[in-house]
Image 1 (cartoon, helix red, strand yellow):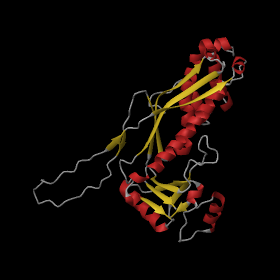
Image 2 (image 1 turned 90 degrees about the vertical axis):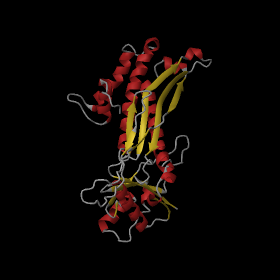
Image 3 (image 1 turned 135 degrees about the vertical axis):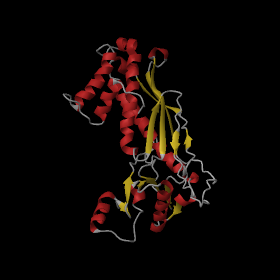
Image 4 (image 1 turned 45 degrees about the vertical axis):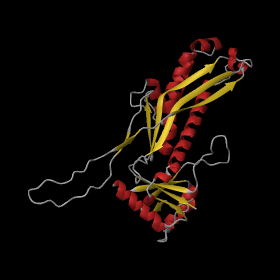
Length: 332
């Protein structure tokens, strides 16, 4: 979310989306309050002429609520390895990656301080954004009768944008494979010793005391240990589809989904696992500027159809500026 203070309606929507019930209000009443704000912006009731006269007030409310809804959709799925920032338009924040070099300690002659210095060089990068949008339309008579539900359209737009960000995160991670150091990437059949060595390299490179392994259920099912498993671990594997740990390292299943517009095609690769320090966010996601919501006046079109446009500036990057921060194991 943005670094500045949320508006009252954003706070209300955020609390409702995250199940935080306010004193004297149920979750449904909180959701109703958000919906009622849209109705009030139309003049207190649906009337096509009142809406047309006040539509930019309605769009402003939708633009306020969209970042809150997207944040709620994304944070539970990707918060373990993705950092989200929501900035003002034209702001280009730098993401800083700390210098993890281990500096040598040298022997000095007594009474001599003339030794070579080491400069601490933190690396930083920005995340470029591009405009992504989605447009819905309905026939004029559905719009005139009030059956074109703007709240539902907003929800569908937010869901589509969130799904796109999920695809973007997955593509960013798997696309960074070639940029990683050889010691933290490998391709081939699963080998327990190889994975264990990668884990140790990541711990040594980052100073982390523990790491986590992410992948789809199918990918995690490749991870087995010749040490053997207890009956309890086998029961969990039968329930989850994978063992929950590998030599003390937690395995976490990523949510799977279809690529938009191509039913049946997974957008989270089923043949990769990602090894991430427990304290590191390896993907940086940037939302730049306010969402843009607009409407094409049906009277300007020959078919008199009503169009609603939703846009956001979105970008993502992986922290390959430090090539030992995380690892990827490709199964073949």
